[in-house]
Amino acid sequence: MSVLEYLDKHMLSRKIEDAVNAAVRAKTPDPILFISNHMRKSVPSVITKVKARQILDSRGFPTVEVDLHTHRGVFRASVPSASSPGMYETVDLRIYLRNGVSRAVKNVNDKISGALLGMDPTLQAQIDQAMIELDKAENKSDLGVNAILAVSIAACKAGAAEKEVPIYKHLADLAGKSGYSLPVPSFTLISGGKHAGNDLAIQEIMILPVGAANFEAALQIGSEIYHHLKALITERFGSLGCNVGENGAYCKFPFLFPNFSLREGLDLVKEAIEGTGYGEKVKIALGVAATEFCIG
Image (tube, rainbow, N blue to C red; front, side, top):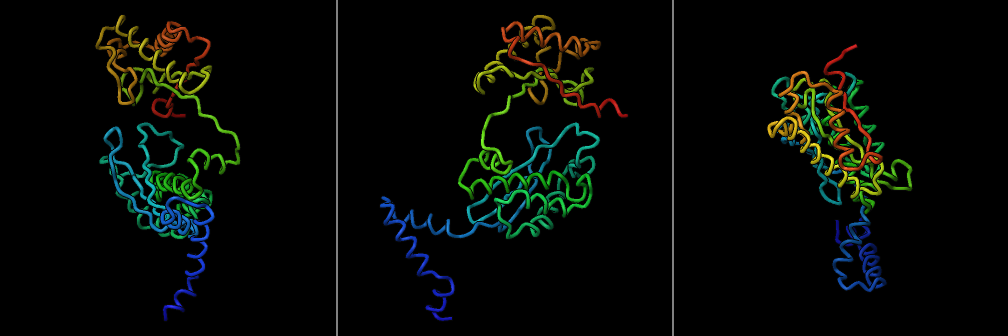
């Protein structure tokens, strides 16, 4: 193939001329950078590579991390590992007892990657559907939901980058929403169940600052109640009662009083809320995790 034939085949002369003209019209102070970005935008971005690996999560357990490559760059995502999944939840694929995720990693690298190559990262629904159809099991035990979710999140980041918008705007667009609002943050104050190993059957007693004017105010409310609860626990159970579990919530004091009930825990949280003066702005929530103590 001659030089002219190569230039004509890829329309290089025309594309370069378009980029130069765009730089001149914009009167950009850095024409080389402008032309480079202009040329990159002219190339449709597709998924070119998906690579998974095993990492450790915040609790020291193995989990899946994915790098998804497009013409825009590399987009990374990882997923948490649930300590008490529900009986009807999809399956987090792990090697029995050792908790390794090598099978899920292999599924990403050997199966999911090939199915997604060449796809447009902005088409989130199509990407997710391709993975759903690849795993015929209803609970996603063939590929593992940890493999599927990590790839899905990485693809979402790539889609947002392709559209040059923040991820929240990309998600709103996918959902057909035009308005944006931050969700109400939840704060876990007391841990029980599998998160703590104490005598509280349920997993979490939480608070929701639903009456806060904005996210900053909600964060302040949660922090003040958390520390006021610490003072109450210290006063009644001593400093040892303030030890926290893996998610930062208080969990030690029920050990000191084996008959400590859920009602007593709720009363303690209610007292902490009222003691900070936020009674009208805060709701109490429960993370029950009923599968861990009640089947049927």
